[in-house]
Length: 420
Ligand code: GLU
Image (cartoon, rainbow, N blue to C red; front, top):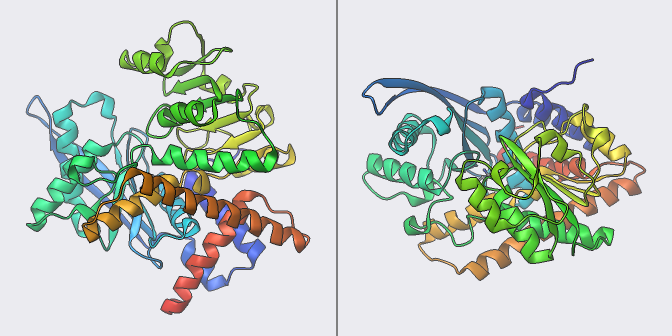
């Protein structure tokens, strides 16, 4: 049988499995199987040669029982409504697990940003936010960066939205530059949060991270900072890294500065003194910690039995399929689930939003400290849920344990709101 790779089908299958384990109320389950609101927009952008291109974008509000929608915007050539639906569902569970006052949402535009000039990218960002303006706002749905979007894109969107409203609305979007009241520590918060989870997992497994061999797939918003942090915080050795074009491997360990230089030439592949490898090869390396930090469906039935790591730290959204999950679990790989591991981004987004609506700003130290408290608590909540089920004679993996906590919280909010 061919493996199901539609991300939304995968998200629904995960939900169904968790719902059955925890015996989730059938009505709550039915509400949670579909997004509450799916918006598709087609909008024009003026190109540098004077012509106009039409782009398709989405903004999906999965569930807002616990608060306004929250979730990033991806600019990706292969973006699809089902990918955005899946990502919006995962945001709902992510915010619930972190216990921050948001529901889940996600946005996307079908576009290859590598083909756009800076001006065209600005035009696209402004036009997209104009098209979805009715559906976003500080108390309805709050976007943020994701794959191929960044603080500058957020700044253009905040500016455009504020102009439309005739007043500054900084709390309508997070991940903004510091100049526009972004939060201290937001830029690397996804990776920082992932490192706190890794620290806790290593304690649990008695794994010494000093000189541990690490491979990272992806050199974007998450992978780039993960590289720097894993070496600085734990003195671990990153032996391999990749981007969308390919990767490099060095037994001795790679150097962050040299990697940034290579990236200036277009890809980490231009790193000198390292062997070139493919993304597939990277995932199968013999390492202590493997960090998928790119996109979904990277570890599937096809390669799950070749994964050769002690710890799998899912910094990307949806990198492991359910079939791969089962194989990894049977093989005893400690697989730390995405919506726990990468929740640092949205946790600091919550801090940014709170600072924007209160107008009072925090130091970087405060931000990291509060992030550590929340994500470390989430990790121990997940372990405790797993243990509780073990006590009942039921073995559940960490992903299912995390789902159970999140679903309890979202279903609980829907219940008291009287939705079922
Ligand atoms: N895009 C990030 C994620 O997938 C951050 C979302 C946010 O900050 O709202 O978690």
